Structure formats: structure tokens, C-alpha cells
Length: 89
Image 1 (cartoon, helix red, strand yellow):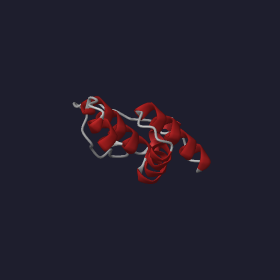
Image 2 (cartoon, rainbow, N blue to C red; image 1 turned 45 degrees about the vertical axis):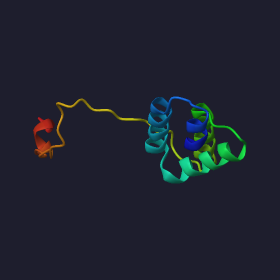
Image 3 (spheres, rainbow, N blue to C red; image 1 turned 30 degrees about the vertical axis):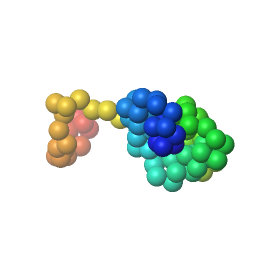
Image 4 (spheres, rainbow, N blue to C red; image 1 turned 180 degrees about the vertical axis):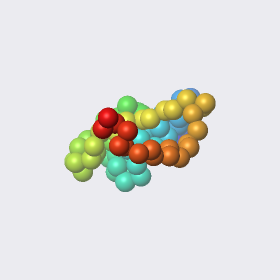
């Protein structure tokens, strides 16, 4: 698909960014199957890849992917548990 985009003179930045987002969201196996389908059909549209990803996700009975974007000010810290007996009072 990348070669098709380049040969057609299309803007690569937006297409590559969106395609990478689909890869991150759906995972390697679903994404690879979707791209193979789209290329086999002679298409090169990112929207077609998104639709194919969703089809393959459903076929594999995987949950709906949700992109979780946390703000930069949050860090990945350990939460120290406290005694739950305090809630019994």
C-alpha cells in the first residue's frame, strides 16, 4: 500500500500515521490480515483497512479495541493498598 501511495503522489504523512494507529489498536495479526485483504482487492484506502480490521476483529471474536490516551502529567506509579477494614465502620 505504501508503494501505491507513493507512486500515486499521495500525501504519506496522514496515511502512514492513521495506518500505524490501526496497527497499534488492532494488533499485528488482525492488521496484517486486513492489509492483505485490501491489497488483494486492489484498494489502497486507509478507510478500507479500518473496515477490514474491524471485520477480522469480529471474525476472531476479539473485544472492541479502545485507545487509552493518558495525559502526560500522569506517571505509572505503584498503588500501595490500604486495609479495607476501615470501610467496615
